[in-house]
Image 1: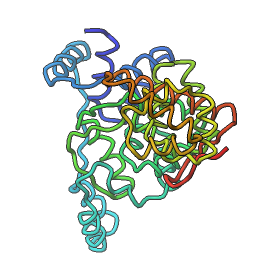
Image 2: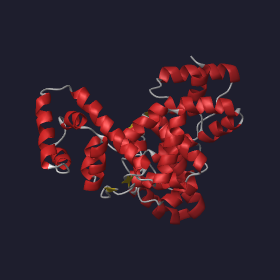
Image 3: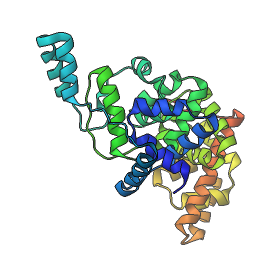
Length: 330
């Protein structure tokens, strides 16, 4: 097994404060390699984890016990601090338990949440943000330091299925500090769609800066995110002036192929911005195509999405981030 992978598994098996202390003793180069491995790590079997721990035990002759959190710990803390008065707080905590990981954060303001997580490792912030509502995550992202924004976005994009033990560790850490509890189910969160949703809700300066930086380091990932930030069906959200600008960028053969698999609403939206003669010609070209492969249609629709991005980048149209009701204007 690769040494970096072993290190990642070991760190994720340690109590969080201990893991942070270990990381603080590593060189920057090793930290980058290990954290990247952690971001990509998934589906680690118990046998593999035990093998790593056994190897570490043999080498170090000791293992660090994992502290226990949960409601019993909260109960003890409240009893010690507040005595009988703590029972009402504990009851409130119990009632706020959610079946959704980090569900208790739904009503926590971004500024308040930032005070608890801003100093955390980017991977921890990514895990928390991937469970927030998109608008809430966007506010948290905007409040992070610029250098940390990039790290967090990359980790959310690469995050897929999260080991429940990792979720539990982060949950319990916040639980002790914010007096809330969470469930421990296996959760699938993060990934490129989550990043796209978050960036769609941030201001243009923020999301453009992140995407440009990401493109230098991982062009494919940046492209995946961009494609999800505006999909072909979103043409319905464009106003007529934006559609007309787009029509100048895309020729009839491209439109014919892309509209072959489009909804009637999108087709009428495009045809409605053409002259009667041009609309009739496009309809004829669509019919002339006959049966086409779905992959060809999707590829052409992607080219039109690329054209929307080019127009936005050149300033000919503006994509307004935020509400779904906002329009694209020229």
